Image (cartoon, rainbow, N blue to C red; front, side):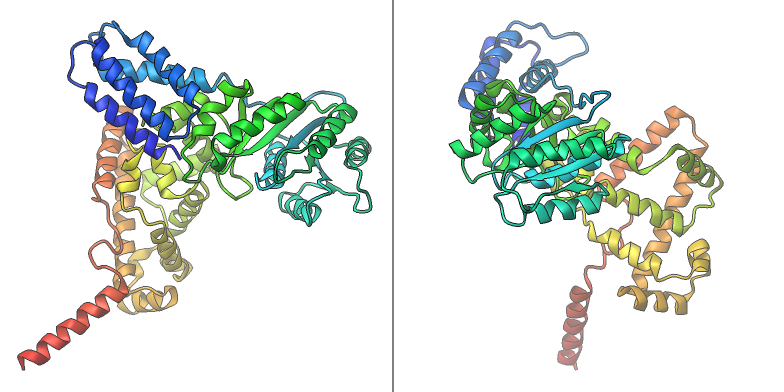
Amino acid sequence: MFDSLTQRFNNVFRGLRGRGKITEDNVREAMREVRTALLEADVNINVAKEFCDDVQQKAIGAEVINTLKPDQVIIKIVHDELVRLMGPVDPRIPFVAGEPTVLMLAGLQGSGKTTTCGKLARMILQRAKRPLLVAADLKRPAAIDQLEVLGEQVGVPVYTERDHQNAVKVCRNGIAHARKTDRDVVILDTAGRLAIDEELMSELHKIEQTCTPHQIYLVLDAMTGQDAVATAKAFNDRLELDGCILTKLDSDTRGGAALSLKKVTGKPIKFVGMGEKLEALEPFHPDRVAGSILGMGDMLTLVEKAQEQYDADEAARLEKRMAKGTLTLDDFLAQMKKLQKMGSMKDILKKLPGFGGGAAADMNVDDGEIKRMEAIVLSMTPKERKNPAVIDTSRRRRIARGSGTDPQDVSGLVKSFAQMRDLMKNMAGMNMLQRMKFSSQVSQMAAGGGLPNLRAKRGTTTQRRVHTKDKRKARKKRR
């Protein structure tokens, strides 16, 4: 989402490198470019102006510390101001004791409110709570059906009253049902409209007054840009909002809403939707977003995603097998599946320092390669996956037919796996300093395309067929 903004910031900082001191002239020039970048990212004009004025005031006359360069001083100031602009934010949900915690979600139609209810229920369920979804959107056709499907997918019950048109009564009855069934969190999915109107606001206000929810979250579509900020301001005038949930943040939107929302409305972003899957709801961390915008990556989020997929016992077992060099293709396949659950390779790369902006986009990362490898491994017998050395010519042909690939692809995978297993065995015997140096070398190889790729040199099957056909034609002409 912030790729274009990251590239513009990188260009600004690149222009400051090599200078011994930050002067008023080069700071003003840099801030003009930053202001333009923010406006192009659809940031509110007043927010952009105030942000640049604050950075300029703090940067002018700042002496460069011995170990720093001018661009690094500016980056530090810009980072701190970005964090201040979007924060502080506490992404925790304040659960109450002794009674159900009531969470009310509001928003316009199309913002992803009902889907966010399902995502939020899944997140709360993982925190050892017992949530209940209440279908109080009685205006939109199939809204109740959609919530029931989502509830079934995440394993959370849904309270419905299909014969009622009074959303206030449904919410009140839903909370009472939660008390009877020992549910400690209630999520109210309220109605939305295509635009803000008095009927919608009146209904939401009545629900707020009657049910007194502990937290009210406004769900906003990040793709609507400054319209999302205006919507938040209108809702906040009628409801006591506790925060916002910004959806579709994984799209190609320019991100102006994320940078403007807190400053204009005074309400923080609590969570962000990063995809359509039910697990794609993340707490909002201004410091991590600022680091990502400035090309510093987001290692903390990457580590948290990895921790969701791996447990300590499994990691210990895997490390022992790595040290002995006894990893199998079953282990390899299991790790590939866990990696896929963390997101696409480009999304993972964007969270690594130095790969922000266009760096990850410029890399030729093919997620389909993982699926081809998975198909090859699944076409092997248990014996072949345990000991790939037994795979001979006839076995390669059989595996290739079963996976829809070529025998050369099977050979390439087996060879790449053997190299990776040897690398991991060597790395297991290194100390921490040696591992860091070794990992850096491997990362450089990966960034430069130095690691093996099944189809890197050979091209696609169609390309090879065309090439073979051309060679045959050439031979006929020579005859």
